[in-house]
Image 1 (tube, rainbow, N blue to C red):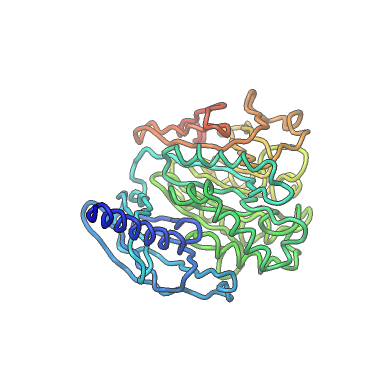
Image 2 (spheres, rainbow, N blue to C red):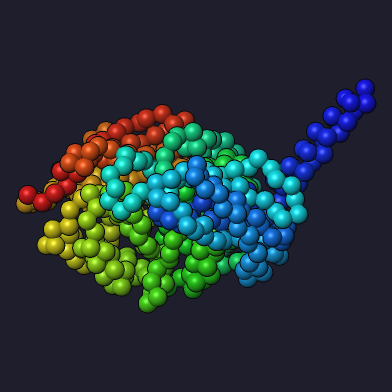
Length: 430
């Protein structure tokens, strides 16, 4: 009897300590941008004790200690903020990461990720894309069950995820209130389904109007520096903009693919520019210097499609200049990825004397469909329009001389809706 009592007491104490450890975390830790040797990490906690991080592969183990950063008094939200970089990693290697507070016992919460392959190393890989998510609290609670799409996304095996904007929805003036915006982001971080997905693989993100400011907002939005500051806090990209211009755009590489994730909001001007001259010059230079088989250009706003609402055609001079650049400079391997529309489609633009351009649009993860999109976009590939909740998966496969990009769209249950394959050889100049 005494043995049974001691055994039960030991189990109870262990569970209490594990629960205290889990309660110390806000949501689950998130891995952001990964390179061959580093990984960006974001952890938010409810206590300010030193954070201990242990990470290991099959060949080595490293333990590091981090102090919290009280960034702009985020502790007012009972939030202590740890954003740091894991270093001295090995390329194309699976790592497990274990987080715990200095004065608390360990728990079994382990995050797993894989570092990027060596530059231009040929490796089959896959990633997910999606846009337009909302936590659906308060007046919108009745549609909350649609967050189950994140269960389907978690169950898939991919190397990383790219959020293509409207990753949170600021509503009813929240974009002018710092505390309300932080709380809105915390609604996401504490949602179990979203948090579990964010914890499951590296995450990259751009924004669109609803996590930048008001609906269809542009660069003259007065509070954009504050929303930019919050975006940087809540995501862990490798970089944001340039020293010479603010924004969220950046570039990263994975195997023989380069990714150019763009900012369509911070420098937008009505009918003049969607990206701005500095960002355009940066993008052109990066594309010219890229030798990747596939060059993915990721935009919160559609680039090629012609639909109702916002698209690049609303900025005709900037668009024409960029399209001329792609053709005149012979930039090969370009595929566009976009969100925003609250429906999905594949767009194909044929061009004279060179390869066609493609754009895969994936939207919305959890938000509702807006009627009116189905009858537009003359460049839509037949049978690719999908107005129900969805996410995209993109697979790059094959030997170096026969690389293929598979574009796949999935519904909220993780069932395949449509797929389309593009050979790297079909994205070359004639």
